Image (cartoon, rainbow, N blue to C red):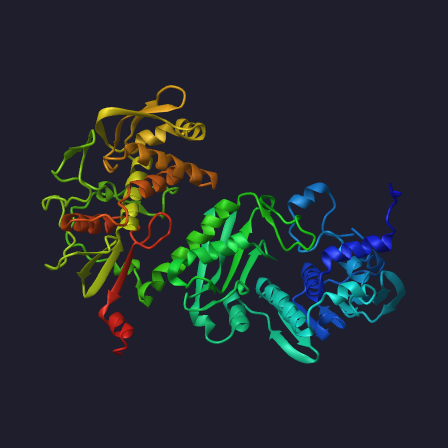
Length: 593
C-alpha cells in the first residue's frame, strides 16, 4: 500500500481551483460576488481573449484595509461567517474563502484596493499562489482585480477551454445574471476593447430587462407577485407567451438575491404557461424568491450555483400557480381576460346579507353565504344505493332571477367548455374549473362559517384506508364533518360513511373520498392551510369533469353559481374559469381591422 501523506499547500490550492475555477466565466462570477458583497454600485469589467489573457474588474465597493489584503488570499479566510450557525443564515454571495486563493494559484493576480478616506491604498501581485509584490499605492476607494494568464501553470486545464467566442459568450451570460439581480447598480463590459454591455443603474427590474432583452420587450412584460405564506415572497417579471426561446437561457432565478440554477423551478415557470407556448420553447423570465434564510441551504456546491430548499414541492407549486394566473387567461384567444369590472350584470338578485369573511379564506372583504351553494331542483333520484340530486339544476324563478341571455341558448363545446352570449360578448367558461370555484367557495363557507348539510346514503359504506390516509383523516375528522360527511373510524384502518355532502357524485363515493384524502395530504405536505387545502381538494375531486354532457338547465345553473362567487375568474389552483371575446376581438383575429 502506498504511503499516506498530507498534500502540499500549493497542490491543495490547485485542487480547490479545480472546484471553483472552471473557466473564465467562473472567475468573473467570483469577482462579481466579492464586489457586490463589498457594497459596490458600479462595476467595470474588461476581458481579453475570452478571459484567458485578462479579466479585470474595477468596483466602487468598500475596499480592503492594508493589514487585511494578504489575509484575503489565505485559504478559508472570510469576513462573511464566524461560527457554525452562520452557515444556516447566509446573506452574502461569497462566504467560503476559497475563491481568491484558488484563482491566484492558477494565474497572475494583481489587486489594488483602498478603503474610503484612507491615506493610501495597497497593491499586491501574486503569481501561481506566491506573493511577488506588496506595496502602498494611490488611495482610490474600491478595488481593482486583474487576473492575467489564467491557467498558465496548468496547461491541461487550459486545453479543455472552448473557443474564444464560446468563452466570451459564457462571460456575457454570467454578467447578465448579475445585471438582473443587481439592477440598481451600473455595469459595463468590454471584450478585446469593444464595449459589449453598458447598463446604467435602473430604478426597477423592468428597466433592466428592457436593456437586457432589447426590442419592445417592455410592453410584453407581465409582472408577477405573491406572498403565499409568511416568510415567502415570489415576485418578478415574465414575458407574454408570444415572446419565447428554444432554451432556458433567458430564465433567471434569484434566491434571496443570489442567482441560482434550478431545473425544477425553471420547469415550474414553464409549466405555468401550459399550452400557451409550443412544446420545446421557454419564456423569458426573471423571478426573485425571498424566503427565510433557514429554509434554503446555499452551501451545497463549491461554486454556490445550486441551492437546496427545505420544501421545494411547495415552492414549485406556488411558482407555477403565480405564472398560470399571470399569463394563461390573457393568452387565451390573444384577447381579454375577465376583470372584475367586466362581470356580467345578473339582473335583480335576492341578496342574502353578507357577513365578514375570515382572513385565512381566499381573498378579502365579504363572503356571500348561501349564494354560492349549488341548490338542487326536484329531480332527486336513487342510483347505486345513494339518494342523489342533479347538479346545477336551475334555481326556481321565485328564488332568484337567472343569468339572462336575452333568449339565446348556451352551447357546450367538446363537452368541456360552456359558451353563452351576453352584453355584446361571447362568454366562455371551463366547466370543470368553474365548478371547482363554486364548490371551493361552498366548502370554505362550510369550514369557516356554517357546517354543510349531508345527504344520507341508502346503505352505510365502509372501506379501508392505508396507514398514511388514516392518519390524515383522523387528525382532521372535524373538518370532514363540517363539510357534510357523516363519517367515523371503523376498526384499525377502516372508515364507515353514512352521509356525504350533497355535491358528491352518487356512483363513486369511495373513489371520490380516497382521491379527496390523497389530494388533501399532498397539499398539507406543501405547507398549505388545512381548511383551504381540504376545500381545494374536495372542489377538485367532486367537480364535474371534462367530457361530461350538461343540459341547458345545468349550463345555466353553472353560469349563475359561478358569477355569484366572490372570486369567479380562477379556480382554486389559479387556472382561468372565464374568457370573453368581443366582436372587436374577432375582427382583429380575422384581420378585418
